[in-house]
Length: 213
Ligand SMILES: [Zn+2]
Image (cartoon, rainbow, N blue to C red; front, side):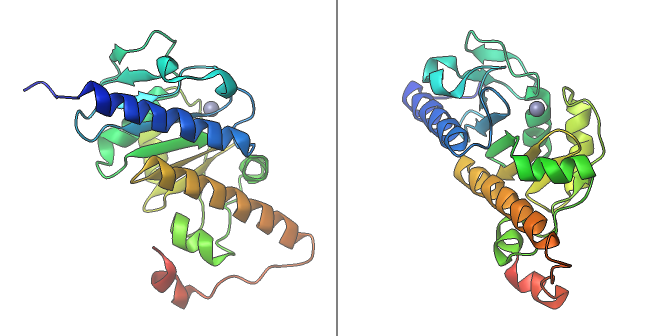
């Protein structure tokens, strides 16, 4: 049976995506046209995503691409993001994921160029991300295989750093994925600053299970 999506539902989700993108852009996590965001319509199963290389401050609901899981464009006239295969790989393999953010925050990128995992120094890193944020070895990001490989590195975490290329966060809503993105960046900044003063103390591992949300 063909998936059913009401026009009203799609419009509300497009609005949610554009507002989420504007929020992430307003706090500097996706400078200019970098990064991309998507969400899944739980009714139709379609993926709504920001277009390739398009300024967030000009983005309206008409710019949103609607794709099926195979990557066919169902709606939208902009060029699909070159990283849509990565998002689609996540939606394909992780049915609980309803929102994804690929961002380029500066402190997260600092650890990405060092190929160094971001330690769960703050309780919120554990609560929101699920633990240390791992780094995926460098690879070009435009394929579904990249997404599959990324999920292996990510494991049960809700975020992963891409070596030399930003990060990706997932959530059971776009809001949660945005929240996770912000926490990864705060953790990276905190970790970097703490390292200037010595070796930071980690949260004892025996508390991790209790804190992970
Ligand atoms: Zn990218």
